[in-house]
Image (cartoon, rainbow, N blue to C red):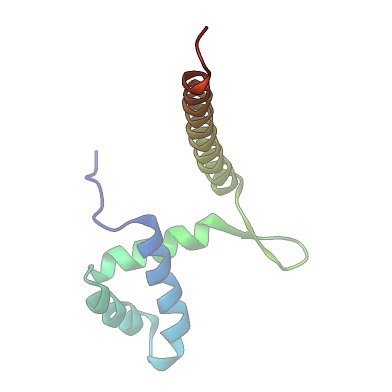
Length: 109
């Protein structure tokens, strides 16, 4: 079982994008990987694996447009679902709080 990475998924994606943007400035992809990995503070092998995972995550559709693989799409939808459930819970609790505050304001007979 591997240990948890110190790099968030967002920082990994940013590193992969940075490599794609600056790749033409280097002679080989490995040179670019080594240089950018040093800049962001990870090992070159880690960045190479992130690139490999990113390529696997994206699938090219028949019309040539990049699309997410089924697993990546399911992960994305599950993440959105968790966020929406959390937001609904916050709204429900706020509604209860304000309803109780309104009841406390009413004059008692």
